[in-house]
Image 1 (cartoon, rainbow, N blue to C red):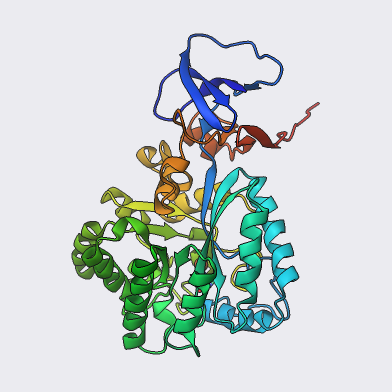
Image 2 (image 1 turned 120 degrees about the vertical axis):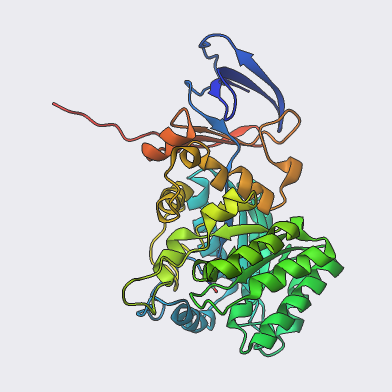
Length: 411
Ligand code: 17E
Ligand code: FE2
């Protein structure tokens, strides 16, 4: 298969991309628009990019909002309580059905790489066992990483440490954590030492829900970063949310950034989720409740955007479209300047791939997997401005999804 008339990010002019089976065989400059042969694809001068990445979602909790009760306060903490009620009703089949429905929504929006957190604070590990099957059964659609996520704590939950170890033994790819939710500060710190030991011992990646609160005293990020630095594991460690950083004072943050840079860890922000869940204990002025995305990016560190939730106890909306998250995030994070807009797709493609350690399994380069998207606009800025879409998703060298844009008729 050949994709003609493709515009590539960071390159002038049009290109022709040749796929050979499941690999990219050639990428060549083209001198004029090219007629399209049967079976080939026409990018029509629009962008061709590697697939969108969903770096942070909870596929075990998706599509459960209101079951049995709605989150009335809109706080993270009520979300955790409402989820505990729904978790008691979780079954193997229920988890698989909801996760697969959600994966279809992600695929329809051009996502082919997903990292999902799965709650392992359940003595039966029912959701984890279901998601391990989903990971195998959806390989034709996405590459899925599973995080062993201790929603109710590692130290604060009965047998929390053993459940984390079991989850990794059963086949989870990534070690998670939630230090700001542990009962005490000391437990938060010891949970991070425990999870970093577990990751180091097993070779797993790390992705911690870290300081997901407006509490400026929540300072577990420095602990995670220092553990990553000392162990030389930064490239394999991600801090998700870190919303407390939006409330840290600038003097502390300035010192913290030095450590963060030395550590080499990545960051994931979920802007729609955080603008909804945080700021809930404020009247006015009301905090945005996000981490310092623009500042992290400008300091040369790796940061990307995720959806977090689709219709669950924490967030009632969502449709799988990561471009919606990008648009909201650029607004909320004061990133609508030209320099940010013209490379904004980094936040849902290359930066996310780096956080997920996708390495040579990702990117438009000869020899890499034949996974790519044809978008509806010629550059990042126009893609965001026009609220564009992924029009074609190619996976393993074959068309996986085609979207027909809405058409408008006027008198
Ligand atoms: N659990 C959590 O601790 N934080 C979140 N944002 C979600 C689940 C969605
Ligand atoms: Fe999350």
